[in-house]
Length: 280
Image (cartoon, rainbow, N blue to C red; front, top):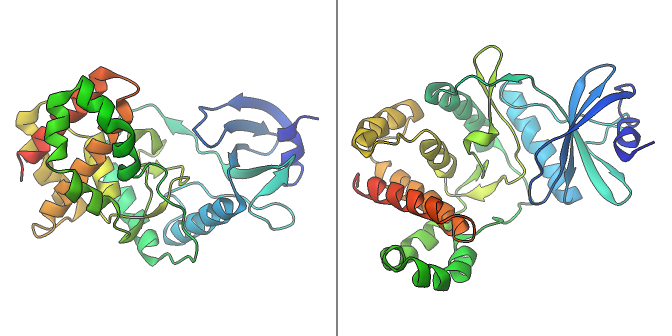
């Protein structure tokens, strides 16, 4: 019997009929597993603390609305994870979804409901940001100065304020709210998945990620897009500057991550940063 079949024995799901590997992240692996009762998502989790946090956070969101994110299942022993061969596993409902285009309005509608759960959530333990700006900047600044001196010079002038913003722990956030973690459901609503990077951080961080995810390619349309985004998100004019600063933070971190991966991506992030700066 393989490990996944052994894991699912602890749940009332019946035997496994099919296993499909999913895209694996940096700290976890995931599989879609078909059982005789239903399909589920099985994923590894790096620690018991992380498993308990994700379960508690998902429960808080489910208490607001059960259609926002898939529930994490409990074993027959009422535990939200199981340890097998020194590996921690969680089992989550698998949501069928469509490949149809996501809409900004549907994504923000879902996130604003999730925001209610995040704002009410209280928890004693919190994980650290896996990619803090301080660490990214220390790692990449020399290479960036050598390969992209103009971009480096521009970042140097604003890095201190962005470092302060990145260290804020104002609210619980999803932490990785790119389009890859948005699902268009069969009823056209949007669901949000994977709270593996949830932590306390800048209060507009998730909004910044969504803003970037739907950002128009043409800079001339950015002002109108920003107005519409802030209207749908309920971001007031008073908060507009700190929101746009958080967008720049999100983009700069993306740029620094791209230094080791793709030169083209660096330039795309840099261009987006300049476009957002022109709005302030």
